[in-house]
Amino acid sequence: MGLLIQAAIVDLDGTMVDTLGDFEIALNCTMADLDLPPITRALVERTVGKGSEHLIRSVLAHQLAQPEANVSPCVTADTLYEPAWLRYQHHYLRCNGQHSDVYPGVVEGLQTLQGAGIRLACLTNKPLSFAQPLLQAKGLAGFFDHVFGGDSFERKKPDPLPILKTCEALGTTVGNTLMVGDSSNDAQAAHAAACPVVLVTYGYNHGRPIQETPAAAWLDSLAQLPTWLQAGR
Image (cartoon, rainbow, N blue to C red):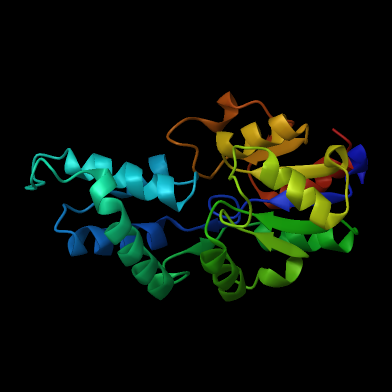
């Protein structure tokens, strides 16, 4: 294919699978356990993508600031984090994949890339214990030689380390490996690693238009990726 791409590293949430429903259910159950007001889907969309710790701390801080949150002044996002994380894990594992859908064009795009000899890895900030069952449930696991989560390495995206480590696992050079994601988080990691990056337009980008983020291309479907690569653009 064009650009001498040997492998592709593909993000999960917002890139391959629309998981907002799973996040919304798990977080709202967690908030109910902590006697905090329910969250909105819009809040999830703005805060998801930087790992579970960031998500939970952001949601807790937001909910504690709501007028209907009747809590003691000594209760903070920090003091609630550990119980929230435990309850969130419980709820997320129970609903993982039940309220999410594979985006149109994902399977077609992955099939074409795999058929062309492009090696594939999934790299997400989602905990590995969440990511692997989700890929299995959605019929996507068989496409990937490796799956790495937000707890697989010492640091998460947007740090470049996860991309560098994934390239090591794939046995490919960074310059010949394509990062495919949906947010500035993915792009920042790729740019820092000197890895080419393509972004999809339909995912979650912290409430900002994805076209604001520099990338080699912005695609409306993963099914467009093989054609874009073949053209060598």
